[in-house]
Image (cartoon, rainbow, N blue to C red; front, side, top):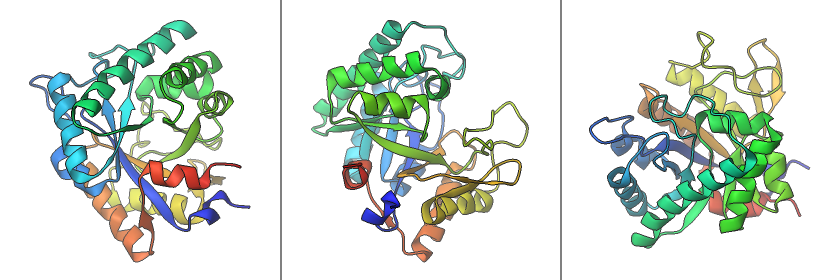
Amino acid sequence: MNRRSTVERAIDLSADCGESFGSYKTGNDDALLPLLTSAHIACGFHASDPMVMDRTVRMCKELGLGIGAHPGFRDLVGFGRRVIEMTREEVEHDVVYQIGALNAFCKRHGVTLGHVKPHGALYNTAAVNAEVAAGIAQGIASLEMDLIVVCQPGTAMDKRAREHGLRVAREGFMDRKYNPDGTLASRRIPGTVYDDPKVAAEQAMRMVTESKVRAMDGTDVPLEVETVCVHSDTPRSVEFARELRKLLDAGGVRYRKLTELVPAVRPR
């Protein structure tokens, strides 16, 4: 049975947010956050700083958004998109450190941290490297078993999170092209990041209503998701989110935070 049948046509809309740092501004959180139901907030390693984290958590509280930690490799210069060789234990401790930093601001503002989504190269590495995925899962599980892990379905991260007893939210990307095996096509390949909001929104709509995505070779790949992400550093991210909401509204799709969606679709 299709897991989505337990919660008909409902989806979480999310974005990687709070990625400015000092005097450097990335993304348009003021315009993007009101269009979302959940936010993945950078924790200081690949982007963000204490001022940005505090402000972003406060904004999410005011908007009633689900709040998640967005830990990455310690790579400010490369925005967390460069792979750093690390042991399982090093990954675990770096993830714990970053989640703890963001959770402090959540406690300060009286909100609950609901999920964790690895960032950039850490996300992609955890998708295929079982040791890295295990380090992330162990770090999360050692802090709070109720935290939801956001990742691509069927990956090493998905498997390791479930092995540790963690809940998983399967993620789809509206602004990225896919390989035939269901993984994301590399950003280094020209044209793999969409610049047309309508094309991106149509791709996301298929994920939500048909549980499919069209791969780069033209084949349809099964892809069930609970959350659809738009990258906040995409130049037209706000247009992307608005266009998707138009399609979702027209299709009668409801919006739900991850903490509302995942318990209803978790395997029994």
